[in-house]
Amino acid sequence: MKIDRTKTRFLSLLALPLLAMTATAQDAGALRKVCAEKATETPVVKGAGGWLYLPAELNHIAAGKFWGPEAAKVSKATNPENADPLPAILDFKAQLDKAGIDLIVVLVPAKSFVYPEPLSGMELAAAAPQRADSFHREFYEELRTNGVTVVDLLPEMLARRAGGQMFCRTDTHWSGLAVVLAAEQIAGMLKGKAWLASAPQVSTTVDVRELEIHGDLARMADAANPASETLKLSFVRDAAGAGVPPDPNSPVLLLGDSHTLVFNAGGDMLASGAGLADQLANQLGIAVDLIGVRGSGATPARINLMRKARASDTYLTGKKAVIWCFTVREFTESSGWSKVPIFKP
Image 1 (cartoon, helix red, strand yellow):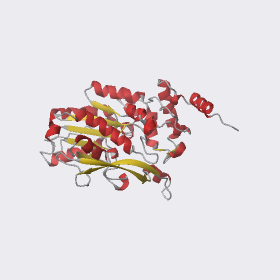
Image 2 (cartoon, one colour):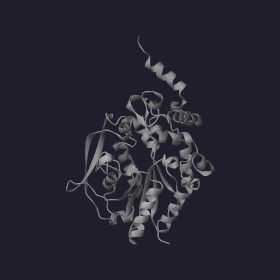
Image 3 (cartoon, helix red, strand yellow):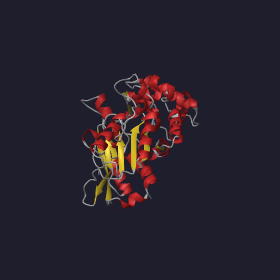
Image 4 (tube, one colour):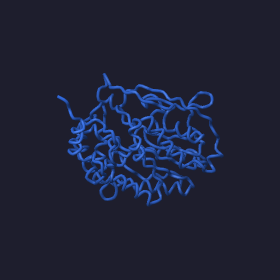
């Protein structure tokens, strides 16, 4: 029997409003409902086409509003007083402002916002879905209203989804293409700064290669026989053909969770020389400093920065920009958002 795939997809779209062509509150609500149902599938949520999802990410999407009075109701914070991310982010910005350091907050979207179809057993649509992150967009505007520079990567990821994979199918992290996309957006905000021209320059080349990986979600789903996938990564090399190591004296500090380490730190971070720090070095022409945490980029990353700053009175003296990069699930799934005094009293 001949299957009318066009009709089948049309009926599927009617049954699942999250893929409707018009972005509405209903779309976001439909995705939250799907995520709430699927998040109970532990330790890994299996979608169509080999797409794997982290239950904690789905829990975060299902939570709804995650700041203000609602924060304590949905956060996994060990102390309800630290459930709301907004006061901690604004406090961090205020501290950096006082030191003359710019803060750029880079939010890595949930994989489910970019690839919602496999959660419902559907193949990827030719056209990318509309945004279904209404609460996140509202929070980003709240940050911007308070003077925080926010890099929202979701629009570009959706716009470029048809041209390349934005997330790993078998891993919790973004893809090599998405890392380059993020570096381009960040660098575009820093190029032209007077201090950038005066920093020690590095000459780089890029070698694009394919790499087979067994992602962390695949290993959690089946440690004995994890699924694999092939990624295209951009490996950055200096003039001598080596990688560009982090420079503690760089005016640019990349701070955050494991999205700052994937494809950079090697080992369980899958590769080295092709991560966000590497792509920033290629885009900016300077090596960047790096404080990345394999766990949470919310409070632990800032604690590591505090320790480093307090160990050396001059560590932050030459810093001009802090790029704070973390996944959006941190807003509810981290241990909390404490205010961290970076500088000595």
